Length: 94
Image 1 (tube, rainbow, N blue to C red):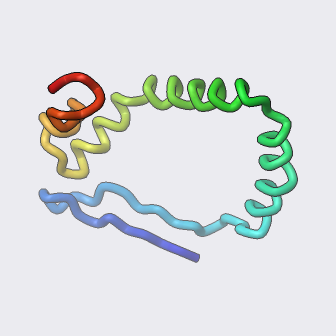
Image 2 (cartoon, helix red, strand yellow):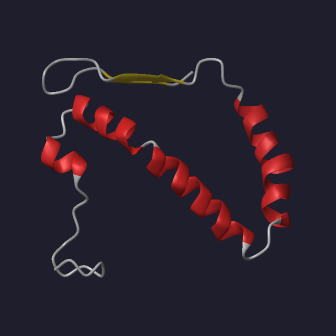
């Protein structure tokens, strides 16, 4: 069993605890090979980016939850609410 504990943020508050207790790694690998791999191989060149877009939309819809966790972990409000891109980035904000 693996256990990772991020026990304290800058204020001494426990932020999270992650454990592999109860996970069957052999079953996880088998599922990936027998189910996930087969499904991925069945996807077309256009299906794969569509799946990635759907995942991005799902994660974006939950960004307020991520911001809350980021704040509890000690990020300043300025740093966890705004993405930072270098001024010479390809994103055109420089």
